[in-house]
Length: 492
Image 1: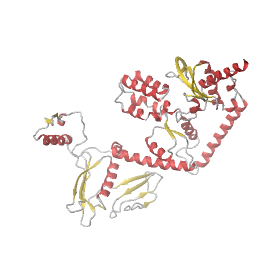
Image 2 (image 1 turned 45 degrees about the vertical axis):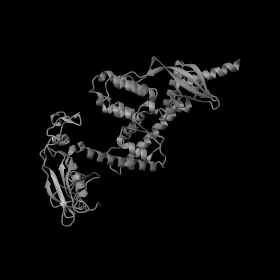
Image 3 (image 1 turned 90 degrees about the vertical axis):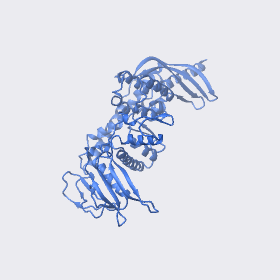
Image 4 (image 1 turned 180 degrees about the vertical axis):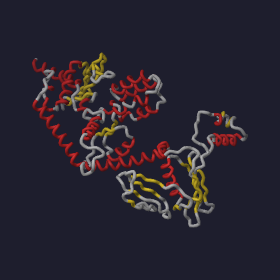
């Protein structure tokens, strides 16, 4: 239990079915209690009263900030008096509502500074040869100052403790507890709490996995995950779900001028950029053409390009995943068996039922794959290995086999004694706006395929195999050409 906090349990008196915990910073006040009802806890901070006693001014400030956060307004430490003795410690402090003072208070303060620096009265003029701006004439700046009188005043009493001497709770403006999220300090506090919770969750998860961290992890665009993941799993590649980011485009950019013109070009440069260099070039051209330099959301996305743009993450294995939709489909699967209203003693049984059904579905799928084989679409040997793949994955292999006909090996360059580079020209396939399947275009792109004769290893800079575990059609087409060369030589 926290020091200086008294809890009185009142069983069976919870009207709202929740735990309410009233906090009081002083032992002389006995009105704090906890009402037992459910696992949800609501902390209620008692309003300040004259006579409350604290150990230090920092405790006063922490308590008052908790109270004003609960009420929905910000606070600032407006005044303080230090002792004239040798220690120079604070002996008096006043905290005020953030709306204290006149609306033009800042402008007046700056004007006085300029006037003093110039050695004359007034608000304008020259200061070191520079024309000064008249802050009072500026109408664009807004202010929340409205001369609010809400405040608390504390000082050191005869016992050396901090005592509230004056308390003013009434405001001359509306306050709402829901507005606490509008105060930057409280937002940062909530974010810090979220980060700590994530940190604990990831440590627990890693311990459950016997401290074997994954090589890569895909999450939504949650700021509270960045630091915990970097600390708990420093060697794990962390990327954001591209679907979540792209789905925010209408919300974030829908009100921009020429939105209908640039929405499709934006998607094209994200999905079709081949490497980071091409992405950076196309992004700069896009921003300049549509005059989006001042858009903060796009600035943030560009700064974190390595977290979500396909051109930056294609060197890592993702099993063909670019989004967290597979995880969300699992969540929907369990929704058919358990829900948030499920009682604790019922949860294990329902959860086991869901897992049993999942196992039965997988066994059934395996049986279908072993019993039925798909017809081959080409005569290439590489396609005649369907039992190595599941049915869905084998269809991807077949797609790459059928597209070998669009590959053309053009050039050959010896990079070293054991490394040869081939240039493979391939027609580009894209997914048109509003479509779900990709279609061929007249555009051509050149890929570099490297081959090591000693190890027989082949690698294409499209990184299809590294990302999805499927050989790209460029590699298959190159392999066929090498096989034909070997065959022709053997028949001579």
